[in-house]
Amino acid sequence: MATAPAPDHLVGILRDTVVALVRRDGPDLSSRQLGVFLTCYLQDGAHTVRGLAADLNVSKPAITRALDRLGELDLARRKVDPMDRRSVLVQRTLKGTAFLRDLRNIMSEAAGSAKKSGAGSLHEAPSRRVASA
Image (cartoon, rainbow, N blue to C red; front, side, top):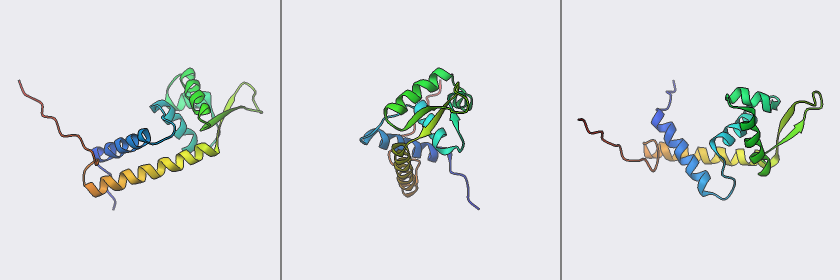
């Protein structure tokens, strides 16, 4: 039976993944933009601005700003819903699919490195002591 990874291990993988994304050539997404991107690419079905705002519990203008950036980077595009012209659908792109593939590879490498090191991260910060009064 597999055990769940320790939270520090998962945070280490997240840290190494984010650092790798920042260091590489390519788009640098905010947390909100990455959340919108991953929701669109990992959850099946049609995605709308209204639906994404509800799923992520943020305002529609925040989703619109995130989609503006994703559109600039060609990671997602918006299209008017032909069935309901008041609604905007979010579509995946080839570049977005490639970015997701790269992200998966980066995360796999980060997870492998964390597993080999036996710690949460290759670059784990030293623990801090809290002085008692």
